[in-house]
Image (tube, rainbow, N blue to C red; front, top):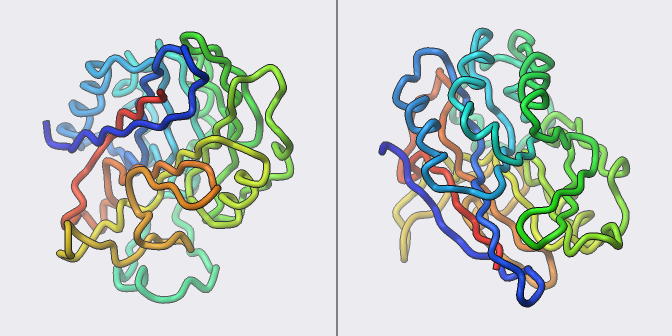
Length: 269
């Protein structure tokens, strides 16, 4: 296994309900040539999740849709939720990696368009729910979950008003799913009473410095504080936030320092 399996628990289930194992992965940036990563993704099924959540950036190449669908094949037989990230819409470009450390001016230089509609069709045909701009209701074990999502905030494609409002009265709790964990989304979801939020995008910082008790991210590539760059965090009365550090990298910046590829099993208890 060439990735780290992160494990966490979120105490949000009603008393007496059976635990729910969620496989959360993000930022595959998959290309047809990444054979080890493909094998790792195929091994995710061994963790026996009840629900799968992907927080985007599946693609890293124009021809990667069949590769992604093949890598996820067994997982697509399980209940699943997904949203997209910027790299599902546009191919990666060569850029100065130091630019991630400079203030974000909001300008984006896009690569060639990617076949995201083909990817969406492949995932939804197998039963996964596209919640880029919608809500969905699922019954997993004893619990009825309302899930709501937004499209990629890094490209300003998010429109939380499409899914805003208090959780459905028939649900036991509600979760949010988004690619880039910008504070505007965390705040809006928190105000609506969501119990937990799942996100990706940060790569855990991708390059982390040795620090007291572990390591510290230099950036999150959004306005999320660096101490929340990966894993499970909880701040005040906000929802629990789980950020996946992701599996891949841009093909033009294939380096991760103290932030290895990872997937997570998050157990709701």
